[in-house]
Amino acid sequence: MSQIIKNGHIQSDEWKVLRLTENEDVATMEVPAGRVIVPLAVWQVQRTQLAGRAEAGMLGAWLAGGKDLIELAEDLVALRLIAIDFPKFTDGRGYSIATQLRTRYGYTGELRAIGDVLCDQFFFMIRCGFSTLQPHEDRYNRAQIEAALTRLGDFSASPGGAEGVSPAAAVSGRRSSDDDPGRALQNATGISTTTYERQATTVGEVEKRALVQPEDVLS
Image (cartoon, rainbow, N blue to C red):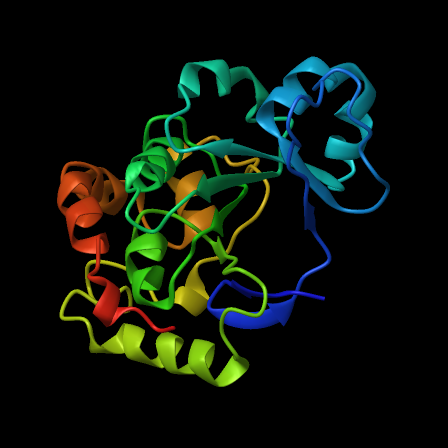
């Protein structure tokens, strides 16, 4: 079972990320039992068959960083888990997608980073709204991940400071029943709407800083 970082804590994960193989048809792709994160295209084509599993919290969808979020807007209420794929660590588009989901679209469910997720980028991902980080299985051992989480406090603009929140305080969850959208967003991410809006204006800087040099990355 793979290890993930969720709400600032390392834990085992039961979710399986399903990826399309070459020439596989999204309409006929078989979605196995259990907790599965399917490609967004599969969800959109098989929504009728998969809606019950999504409602039960057993199915999520993942999308690429370059995806137009307008296509996803109507599905945000149905999907309690959305994952954003980082095909390589130098691709910063996923940071913008995460920030837009939290600020512009008010998404308060679990937001997961998958793909080429590196320890050196944990801070930036959390700051942009990710509540769950999933590095490639077997890329890091537990000690390396624990060290990376400890180093989060070394940033001058640490998520635990006045402008943010500690990773452990970032509580992913379902949409709040509260009528106040700012409160709902804070309940789900641990960061106030105002703070996220301020971060959204500098997301380009976050993306740039996230493009770490290879020698700085834990192998």
